[in-house]
Image (cartoon, rainbow, N blue to C red; front, side, top):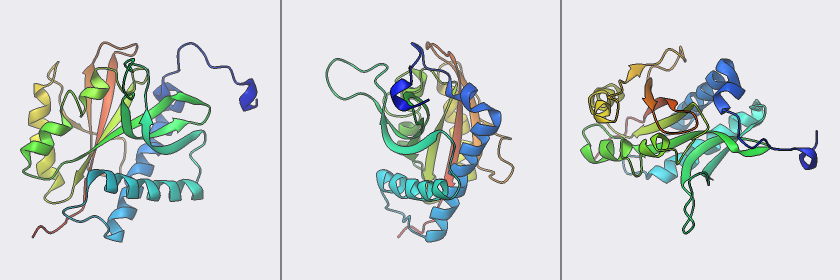
Length: 219
């Protein structure tokens, strides 16, 4: 079927069901492997900006996709989601996603945040209703998807310590969700999950939390 003949359904399919368990695992594995590539390059420094890290991470993801294409999903940065867009201003924009080639409404999105150990400011931004995980929970992102991801860039400090702080703080969100170690990837130990209920077409939302440590030395 060519692009010209492609007819979109009124309601976009859930990307999680479309991918299946194996497909979702493959995307998460690609994200983790590309993080390792970026870390080995030594590019990220203690003062590297969030958007800069995301851009360089996406370069590594794209390079791996060229070696082993991810079927019908394409990695892109700054994906607009017009589902809940207001009449004025720009639509909400997720930091990164794997988007379906033929339907721009179908994507697995990731919101990226700095999350250094000991930073209350970064932890609050990560869990913020306005700019963090709240964008998934109120449907501005991925309202028709059963899962998405939050990515924490731990430039300095311990990912394990950051996870401990996140585990406590996340329970203050609606429904008192719990942060649990994920068993999806066997070779990446800083992957976590939390389950949330929201007022969206797909009301149960599974959030994956990937903590990427860079072991930067602060001066």
